[in-house]
Image (cartoon, rainbow, N blue to C red; front, side, top):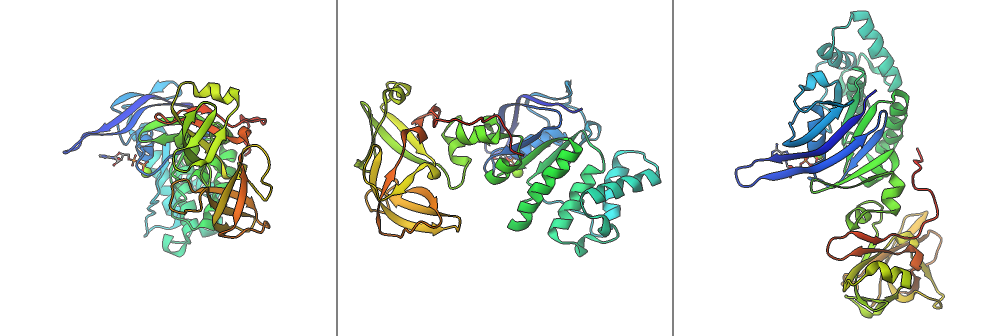
Length: 384
Ligand code: ADP
Ligand code: MG
């Protein structure tokens, strides 16, 4: 059992020039056995959150509780929490077995035979049972990463904290380790906080995602909730690749008029959408690349003339970069993803359809979501 609670947790670092609020009033409830992914760009405070949970930093304000007990001032040793760092330094002169035992010897007084059994079991779980007598330099990057994980797992902690553990691996191995880590966590059912700057890792691994920006929590929800019902423009932009397209629009009655390319992109909204805009003079219109339909059919509502700027073939699909006015320097270049077999080339004119069901609208100043795209599915499910 390990329920982890962060309540109004703040961490300020006092510097010689200016103070940095690395973590700003963050509250998160992490359920027993949950796999929570903390995601955000570099410098947003992710590592600081983990270090506070591990006991390596003391919060300036707020409470961290483990199963209801406040642990703010508990020493790292007494927390029964294991952290795996991005730079998983293994002891080079020790074998894999010794590296894994080291974590155990540090944390508990266990008979030798019992220790050997635990190391063996953990090594089997991680598929490194054959490597116990090797030294780190005789291992691949992926194998070293497994040993680092093993060193944490063998301690049988109440909580795992993983700080960008996959970022030193090559792309293929990273994808493989994503599923491996999920399998292991599912087997062990240990409450886990996994930190990453990579939205793909967040989407694919998390039971829930917590999105952090500039020390502040933006949203916490299932991957599908964050993707389809982002709380604000930041989340909408950060989650999803290629990113959502955004257009700055002036509100003129029920017409939204692009501030960059005026008459070339005017979007008429229904009364219902209009109501969510209220008396704002400006809004940001958002649409995901997969929701833009590129066709030769110029008819219909919400159809616009555009020009193909660049085509990026991905095989299964093409990322098509388009502009409304044929100028590739204007800020309203946008991306549509289309079927990989669709014949499309740079310089060609195209008609794009942007259905009203697919658009999101954000406040131009605060970035707050005023209207989500229309949805039919159930977002509370986690597809792992
Ligand atoms: P992330 O892990 O998301 O990249 P960090 O938690 O490492 O972000 O850092 C968040 C912010 O806090 C950054 O602006 C960083 O420079 C600052 N920071 C982190 N640790 C310290 C420290 N010990 N002293 C001063 N500033 C720090
Ligand atoms: Mg970090």
